[in-house]
Image 1 (cartoon, helix red, strand yellow):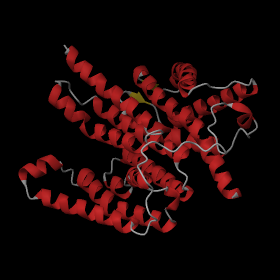
Image 2: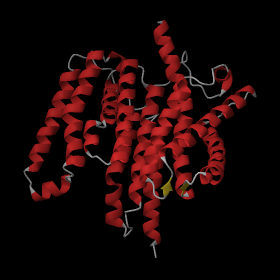
Image 3: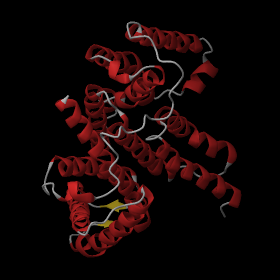
Image 4: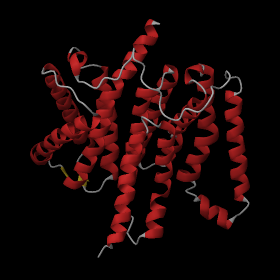
Length: 361
């Protein structure tokens, strides 16, 4: 019988991994570092303080990783005023996502070395810069140098260590204490590299900036479905990217979450079906002049709508073609996806208006 204390610890960690990433759009640097740290220690917490078996948690652990990385990417739509850095980071995000999909399908660990998670560390670099500088001052040369440095000197060694050599840092230090000298030298190289990239930046601003900058009035946060959305063409780049994003996440989830018996084709069709119906619903609400007072209100409404759509798809359409999924797992997956889609709908208009304003200037 599972101990009550063990379950309390388990759910405390899982809920923390769900809620902490929600701070990233408003507090990018502390939010992403907290999510990164919790991702690194969650299983250690379970091992030290519970007797729970961890085999079933592996899939949910990876799903929560993708969830927080997606929120990290979506926060750049809201916050980043350096559009070149944004475009580079968007490429890095999708590049990594494609690599994870290929790895989950083919189980070739080298793919994780070829498609390193440079995205997350470049995000941290940008937000570290923003603490003391206006990131708009980052030139294309700064951005490209930072990405190249992170890719070559940080991510490739890290991905090799974790995924190819499959070494545990703690165990290595215990077995070979001199290993710590290598880590110290690596850290010194990282610090030196960052200094070389930023040494010609303008003088830093006074004070520190941890919270995300407020959205300028001439760009404005769009909290309504509103007339602007209703005037858009139904099939546009926004819908295409949303389907692409959610389809990649869905394929990853289907490979790592238990008891999913459906082809990637069935899942991709199902995701497209859900996203298109969401868009139809948004346009219908827009014509009725509906607006959302908060992200929470929109999230609850769209979650209920998506649960209904998925139940129809799972019990009627998918079953007719021999597919099946675990309902509890599916609803967990839909909860994460719905939140990502709601944040995408909220933040992409800000990026579009910022890009349009930059082009006009």
